[in-house]
Image (cartoon, rainbow, N blue to C red; front, side, top):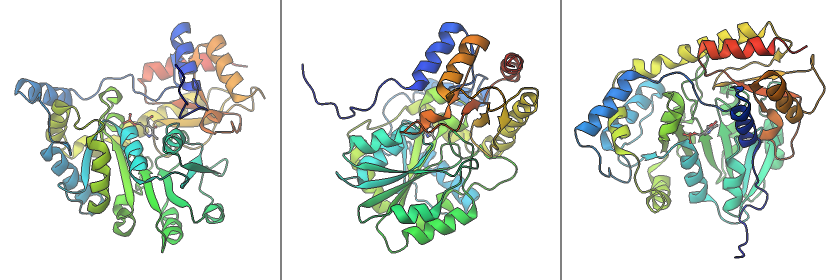
Length: 381
Ligand SMILES: Cc1ncc(COP(=O)(O)O)c(C=O)c1O
């Protein structure tokens, strides 16, 4: 059978290669972004209870209403923003799906989307499968900040979307107040939509406030803001998230969503609705993850790797200039094979494979996992 590929340039990614290699060689996997420690027992109990109480059939297409209400309450408490549970919040099967649905809702063939690289790997295929074009802009190395002048230069009459991601995968960079100011000035008097990937929402460190687009009503009305329960509550396998936007944009989002997955896992939604009532469930997250970052950084001081700062997410990027000048992919594969620690080469997050000789480590792991990994990394001369 002959078909014309919609994504001719997509092949097996380095993520699959590194994870395959990690399991084949029994290496410590600090490559892929998932926790290896247990999630909250309390949340598990809420979900078990929901199943036992019979919440095992479809919930509405928009999501279980008490969960949407709990999200609205949380947003009002955290960001002083009102989002209507009925018309502005939709539960989705994960953050990636929310992003895909948002892009599919908006994009027409030949539209342009500003994407900052390094970028989470789903964005560009999501854009291209819709017949649109990614206009790539490198974040400034080594602090991975946005060059807003370059954004202005790359805008065109076809620019339809600006993709944002804060806290940022793979770098741990976060948006600052000044970025919001610049963003405002860039989109003012345009028809540009913002798709804001905030799946690492609570995983932000050093008391830096999360610059959620939800804080800014003027930006929110032109934005799809995407979240992930899996990422923040240490249950990536649940694949549950949500999207928040204006009532007008949400009508269109739901048209795409309702004929794709229609509705998401019911007991998990019911359990989360109860769990979110306790503010500690999310207020405790920044310090929980910061401890892991700090612990990992402290251990890594005993190695020859040089850190770049991480202010949020699960990740930290390290340079290996004191060890080797190999290409980052070769280096990552070699240390997995020779030292038994899998990482992700940061060039994998650039379409053109830009290589600053850095690798990404995931520190959302048990202390003992981080310890074993670093003991192995210390042997690298
Ligand atoms: C930046 C970013 N967005 C979205 C996701 C995916 O979230 P989910 O598992 O909820 O689809 C990830 C997961 O790695 C991510 O790093």
